[in-house]
Image (cartoon, rainbow, N blue to C red):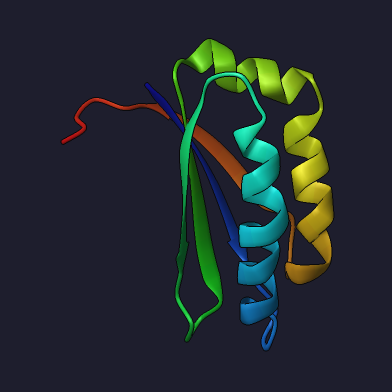
Length: 97
């Protein structure tokens, strides 16, 4: 399994709107992607820092949906919420319980 993390700073007062966008638009779009296994959104309401984690069957699946422009389309939906461009990282899931 492979995890893609996207880290970003949400503008003051926009956290609830971003959560709604994530639940109603970003996650449904992710569910249609090959290899999708799940998503988490972590938010610090005090600082606006957020981390989204999407899980994929493999690194190849995560890379394939980036090449299909899926990832870029999802980031574009949310750019107006951020104070600066998000940072993307990928990790192999070593332990899952």
